[in-house]
Length: 69
Image (cartoon, rainbow, N blue to C red; front, top):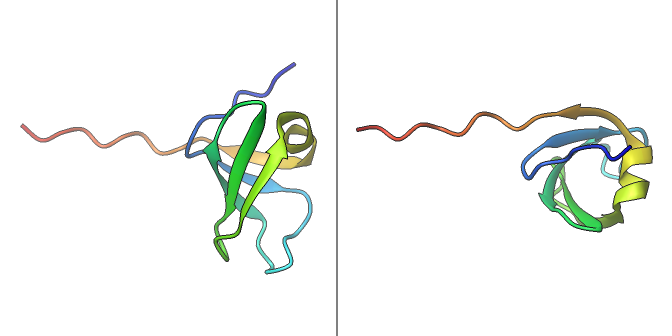
């Protein structure tokens, strides 16, 4: 089954990045998914299958702010 990812979601990966971070933000969706490390800002492209296997926890993005007026 395909895990539903959305732009802006924050995912915690099982393996630690060399900078020490575990949390990444999803910035591109498709067959390949682009993620950015929230600790150092490194950008990485992974296949959807590889990302699904590596995700330990997924946190949905915050609700969009409502316009005033």
